[in-house]
Amino acid sequence: MRKVLYLMGILDDSDVEWMAKSGTTTFMPSGTVLIYEGRTIEHIYVVLEGKLSVSVRAMGDKEVAALLAGEIVGEMSFVDARPPSASVIAAQDSYLLVLPRDILSSKLNTDDAFAARFYRAVATLLANRLRKTTSHLGYGKWAEAPDPDELDEALMDNASLGATRFDRLLKQLRIH
Image (cartoon, rainbow, N blue to C red; front, top):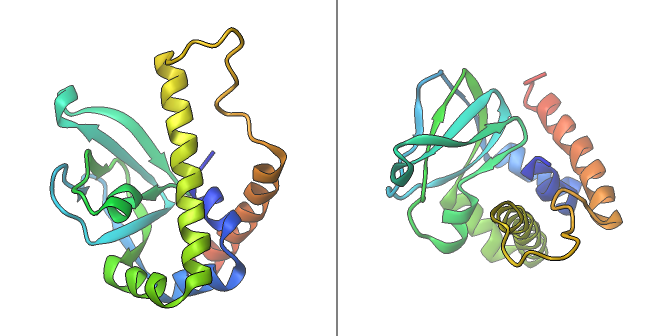
């Protein structure tokens, strides 16, 4: 599931509206390096359209993930303030919503309700990523391992709402 569905499914309409107004829509031509592994970043990105490629130096700069519309990039470095553990490059022409760290931090510091929703959404998507990773690696080998892609009913409702909000965001930013 696209990460933005977690985020926008938990945020409310005014939060998404704030993101649209506070961020900027940026075009990234294919081949543009968005994030360099080990270098501090000053933004969180939402892929609005296109495809990004994630690579890790320790794996010979091999692509470890492809990020499509609806993916969030830079959330881990935002949360723990450490440099990114991977590089991200535009694999094809892409449009991104760029949210500067200082503007997002200011909003989080002055709006407790937004902060609670934002951090809950990020925690949910990171928990989901960890479940998928541990399932993929076979960690803990349960007799009947749960499907890492299976969502509980509450998350499904949020994902549907998140998809609606993401579509509205694309229209508001005139991406579609």
